[in-house]
Length: 146
Length: 146
Image 1 (tube, each protein chain N blue to C red):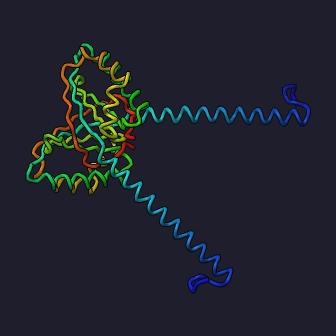
Image 2: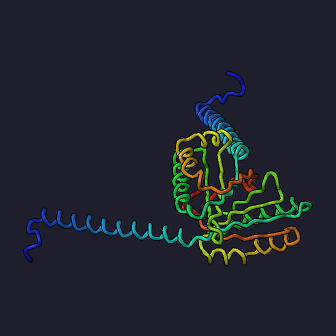
Image 3: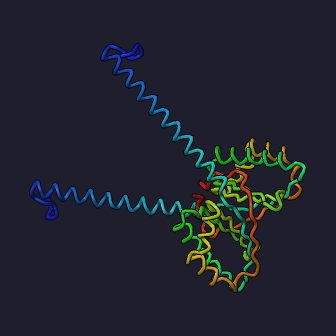
């Protein structure tokens, strides 16, 4: 028994407790750093884009139905599709903008190969008059929709 | 005692239990209908808009700092500001688009009278070269950002 080991049973008990508490604290700090690091890394790898579309007015209802189905399926079944928030301009209802947020480039690559995305592309290819894809940087990447 | 009242104590116990269960079920259904009605009403009253801005390149960093502060404060302190998701185009960093979602028109009216919004407007009035406010209809109003 060296000089640093408490000699009484009570002393050994508290010393053990202290060591265990320290160990738990260290593990907690490491986990906290790791998780915040992961969250920060996720913010950095996010892929954000504005899709700006103009739709054939005669096919607007069909187009919107196809897009709605594609959005609902993608957001529901693909964890990496963080949102597809689509809006139609009130004064130009054929002008659609979609805020697309993917967890990372891999999530996007997987998305465009899914059956529901391919079905949407096939269904709507004659409905879309123009499509502009604008890569973007979010100003407050962690923001949500309440 | 009429003919519909169970005569044994056991019968009365189960009859009472049944009545209570029915009552609870009715209350639950009413609450459910009410809450889904409220949710649907909230979806209908939402105000959604795209703000499209072009910023003076020489003041871009100052503008982004002011906008970031305004967004974080608004989303934090105003329950009716559902999101202010701002992006800068990668190829045209002075072109900013903000997806603005408010719970209703009242929430928006209150927002533009807050000290943090008025401060942002005052700070940035010489930085914004153009501002277009485009009222919009969301295609899937209930969608969130994961």
